[in-house]
Length: 317
Ligand code: SER
Image (cartoon, rainbow, N blue to C red; front, top):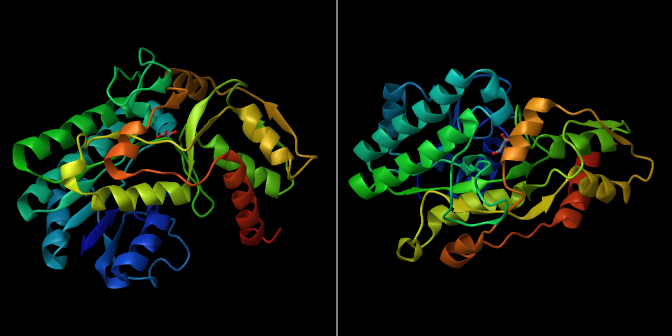
C-alpha cells in the first residue's frame, strides 16, 4: 500500500481509519473521499480530500487515475436497521459502490477492502462458535448485500486477479464518530448516556448476545489484513473476526462498576430485535488468527474502561 483512497472516510470507521493510515503511510498518501456532511472536526485541514459519490464509477476512476491510487477502502454502506426501512437504497449503495470499486480496481490494478459483517449470517447459521465456512442465508437486505459482496469480491480475485480482502465485522464500539442505523449501535450509545449522567433505554432484550469489537482492534484488522502475506491466505472474502460477545446485561454490569448509579431500562425495538435474533451469538475467528495473526487486544472490561476515560475527556465530564 502506497497510495490509498478511502471512500466513506467521514463515517464511524473511516474517520478513525484515516488517522491511522496517515500515521503509517504519510498524510499525503491517504486521500479521504467524502460525499455529504457531517464532517469530522478538522477534516479538510488534516490531509488530502476528494468529493466522491461511490455510485459514480467515472468519478472513482478519475480520482484513482489522477492520484495513482493502489488501494481502495470502500466504506460506503447503509447499516442494517436503516437498510430495512429502504431496501432498494441498501442494495444500491452496498452493491453499487462495491462493483464500481472492483471494476476500477481491475482497470488500474488496485487492491480493494470492503468490510463484510456478522449480518452476512442468518437464522439457519450455527449461532455459537459460528464457523468461518458455514451456512449464509441472511434475512436482512444488509446481509444479502454483504454475502453478495463477499462472493463478488472473491469472483474478482479468482477471475481477474484483483487483490480483494475483507473481514466480517461485528458491532464496532467507538468514541469519535457515532455509528448510524445499525443493530449493534446500542453498545455505543450506552456509553454516551452513562458518561453524560443520563439513563439508557435499551432497544434489545436481555439475553441478546452479539459479537463486538473496540475500534482500535477494528483498525488493526483494516491495516493488517491488507498487509498480510498473500501466500498464507486460504480465505479472502471474508474472515470472521471478533473480540468479545455480550448481551445488554453484561455491558450494563460492566459500566455500573464505573457508575454505580447508572440506570438501564428496556423498550424493545422490534425491527432491531428481529435482526439481532437472526445473527450469531459468537463467531469462531480461528481462520483469521491462523492466516494473518488476528489478535484483538480489548475485552469487555478493558474496552469499557478506555471508552469511559476517553469519552469523559471528549465530553468534558
Ligand atoms: N454494526 C452493523 C449493524 O448493526 C453490523 O455490521 O448494522
